[in-house]
Image 1 (cartoon, rainbow, N blue to C red):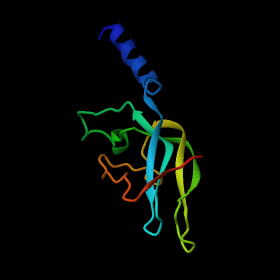
Image 2: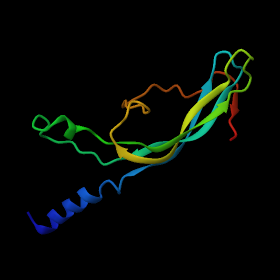
Image 3: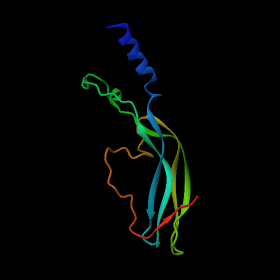
Image 4: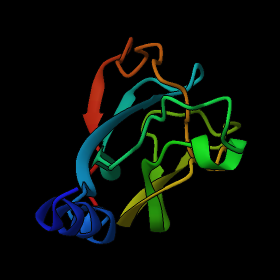
Length: 134
């Protein structure tokens, strides 16, 4: 192997994580409750982007921990609460949602992230829509 190739490989391994394009991204959540008259459109931030991953040809030779893929996930997040308009008095009209403050490339934690490859598109309203102003 040439010295240039080895140095390029080392540089890529060391700085690959910092070159990832994983960052907070604007996203709109649509929230509605059966009892309430309106659907609430909430503007928030989620973690989205590209993370360096590796796919080994020798999968049977490696430990399972070496085969995990990095995903763009939350480093820091906070929760905000919004009031869904048009709810009757016997209904709890509040909805809490996450706001990404910072993101990182790492293993997906199913405690607070959706780790599936494809998801069902349910981010829409079936009732008249109101915009959440925070």
